[in-house]
Length: 315
Image 1 (tube, rainbow, N blue to C red):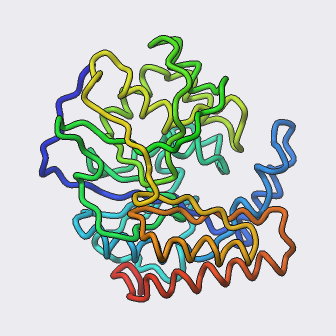
Image 2: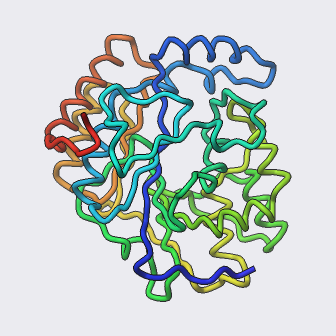
C-alpha cells in the first residue's frame, strides 16, 4: 500500500506522553503490579517515572519555537498536571483507556505499548510530532526540518548502531533483507504519519498486539520508532522518498544527567551550542537521594532561565 502524500499545508499536531510518578494512586498501582514474573526491577523502579516538571517547560519551548502547531494532545493514565489549563481550546487530554482496544492490559507502565496506540487519538491530525516530556526545542523549527524536497519524512539518527538482535530489526530483515547495522533513532521529536502507522500496524499486527499486552517493558517488545522509520526507508513502495539525517551537535543533544557536577557541565554546553532539539535524561538511578534532589533543582533552574515566559497552556 502506498498512501497519498499529505498536502503541504495540512495541519500538524503535537503529542506528549506524561506520567506523575509521585501521585499516590499511581504508586499504589505500581506496587500492585511490579512483582510480576516477567518484570525487571529497573523497569518498575520509581526513578523511571520521576517528574521534575519538564512538561511545563517543554510546552513553553514548543509554543515559542513551533507556533505553527495546531493542537497538543496530552496522553496520560488519567492524570493531568495541576498547573495545566484543561479548558484550553488547543489542548486535548487523552487517557490510555481511550486508546487501548484491550482494556484488560490497563494500567500500563510500558512506553512502547503506549506509543503503538497514538494513531488512535481522536481527532489527531494526519501528520504529528511526538514528544517525550523531556524533549525541548532551543531554536525555531519548521515542518521543513522534518520533510524532504520529495515530500517524504526526514528522520534524525545518532552515530551509534542499534544493538543486533532486536525484535524490530528481525522483523525488518525478514521482510526487506538484512540491512543491519541500522543507526539508533535520536531522542528528538518524531515526525509521524497516522496512515503509515496504521499500515505498519497491519503488517506486523501480531507482534504489535503482543507488545501492547506487556504491562511493563519486555524483551520481546517492538520498538515503534525503529520499525516505523526503517519501514519507510526500506519499503519498496516508499524507497527513495524518505531520508535519515545525522543528528549533529548543532541539531541535537542527548543530555544524561547523572550527578550535580555533570549536570552543570552538560547544561552549560546546551547554552553555548543552542541545538534545535535536546533531551534531558534523568540518569540518577545510582545517585544518592541528596544528589537526585540537587540534579532536579539544577535542571529546573536551567529550564526556568531558558523558558521563563509562561505558555498559554498554563493556568
